[in-house]
Amino acid sequence: MPEITGASEMTDMADGGRSSAITAAGRYVINAVVSRFTVQAFASGVLSAFGHNPMIAIRDISGEARFNPEAVEQSSLHLIVKASSLTVTDNISDKDRRDIEKDMREKVLEVDKYPEILFEVPGVIVKAKSDAGYDVALKGSLMLHGVIRTQAVPARITLTGDMLRAFGDFSLRQSEYDIKPPSAIGGGLKVKDEVKFTFDIVARKQS
Image (cartoon, rainbow, N blue to C red; front, side):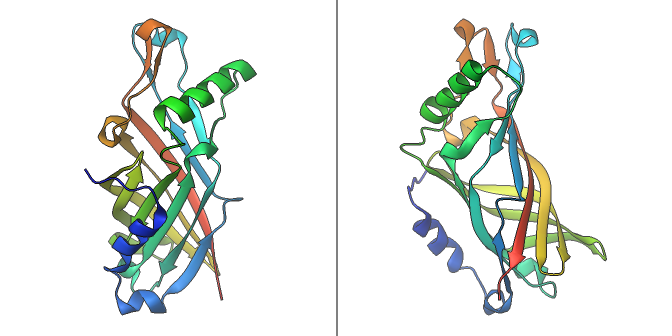
């Protein structure tokens, strides 16, 4: 699988597939303050009943979308996540939180080698639409842990004034991105390969 380390290569890949209609679409910049993006991991192993399922918040997200309500299928998304910004939100001791976050950054995500997580969507598939919004599939290239794979993400899109919102959830397997799920307590308590992402991304239109 090809591996890259920066955002420019991903942007170049997506730009080649954009039509002239994208240029005419409204440009919406992601507002990280009001957006929410979380990861839910699940414990497994013989001691899983004594463990917990870590909830992780993604704090540093940025990027932009191009959206035209008259040509929704030609919309696009460029999303950047700083891997070091993932933090545990569970009600656990400070020591446990520090230990989990240290392992996540150094051993799982290897943020020094792979500082960014990128998602490039050159177009969307519209499943249904109504006055309330659009049900779509965001099918794009996800770069995680230096590995690029096609990832389909179901989402609900709404447009209110100059605010664009996309929300939904999806799952992926860490092993597909060469990530080894962490284990503790001699391997008796492990984290399952599959993790669940939940997102509510808000972006504001730029003049």
